Length: 68
Image 1: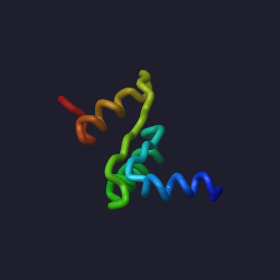
Image 2: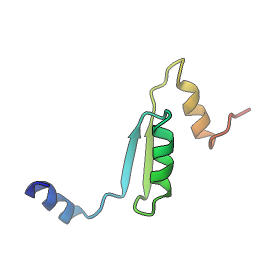
Image 3: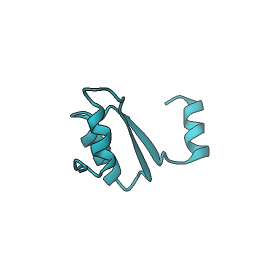
């Protein structure tokens, strides 16, 4: 790790918020594992809204179940 990055970590402390891009077969389980880890306070998942994947946003916002 270079000196500038090391200095940043020393000044700001550990990373407590993380974002996962893509809520697919890899992103959803990765976000769930990060959310379960005590090292992180916030986990954000990012998914584009499209006809083929937009339903995931609704389902994830509903807590993993399809809303009525």
